[in-house]
Length: 267
Length: 333
Image 1: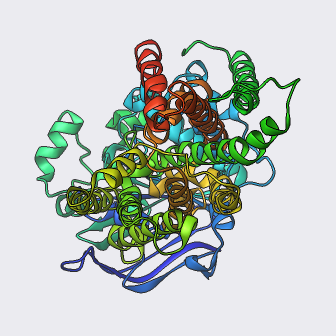
Image 2: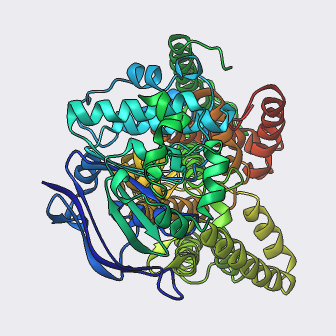
């Protein structure tokens, strides 16, 4: 079943078109990465998917119905959005802030405040003010709120950026568990290519268009990397993988996966 | 502050709230008996009863209404505009109101008798509010920064017009106008009470109803949206609530400073920033403070009066500065 369906989306912020004819689907229970360089349109695509931005043409369907048809609370229980830029002058204590994830619910949802604090390692900070947190802690507080909100579809804009490696790994693990146990759908923008193998499906966004889409190991060729990230693949290989390479397939990034530090940590 | 256990903090909240409620009741009762003529509650004659019922009670009720409207409007605007410097007057409603009120004073209330000033002041505020709303929106979406700037800009325009009118006026009119501009409750009268109650309760009810949405708006529009709120719609409702409360308060009591800006900060330092508690508590504290200030203002230099707005600032500002030094006022250490 399709959780989220973006059909022939055109969008512009005023001058010139920014997203052109983008069609993208997210299956129920999908674990999807959205990759691309700065300014490629990842964040815009997520905001369109969340319904925050309205496309000039095309449609966004949430579980088969246009996203605009849902009532606020009903929508908030189905889909949540974690922005990339997090507001820091919030005059609330951490636990008050995180508890706002309960707002769309009339009854208490599955994740308790203590669970959310525990998972994000913020137990000791629950009485601190949001303004007292470090950048990474603030990010974790937002993630804790998202967990309490407990929507079926999570749209997350660069949740891994600014996080200590421990919490990057923990977050991916946690989301995978939620996906396996509760069948949630995750769509996450990222630009750390070391992380891309953690996703079942990758959508590569380049200049407002879908450049490729599929399982990371199938689509991630050196050529696509060069094109998407505007880099020279040979230099890239040397810098990221200490000069090691796989003789059998020269151009395929995935063949290098055993050398990737991240990948070994995760498996 | 960071180490306070949650249970302890909730206790502190409850204690603080109870103390505030008691203090308000105390101020309310004592202000009935204190005034230019001190009344002994156990030995009231007919004159004393008459003074209380037809002069003091309406004035006390109006002072509480006006103070409550200002305190809660300030709390709402600081959250909605995400700006600790916001107060009910920043939107220019008070300047529009002041202009009309002063015109009415200078031309000696010729139109509708006693009702002229409050009515013109209310209309002035509503007109200013409509103009600020129209200028502060873009494609139907009320934008916080734009709203602030529109309010400040229009405020300057109205103030200039006000100065112009005042500089052309006579001495007696000028004295009354100046008095009104600092907050003047001497026109309080039973006939005004129902209007005050209706508009202020309507605005207050709207803001309590949307307090959760206001909490969400403090996190930014995108997160508020993600939590199921429509930021644009919520801001219009809150703007309407603030507009109604500010317009009625200015039309009833003139421009009372301090309460709208600093009372919410003082209350925030005790109960935190959850608007479901902050708004009613700021209302209560604002009402109590203005009632106390007005009682002092009409007593100490009797038979003359001091404007209530001056007293609120004289009592409130030093206390605020003390808190600023002692506590982390804005949730920032």
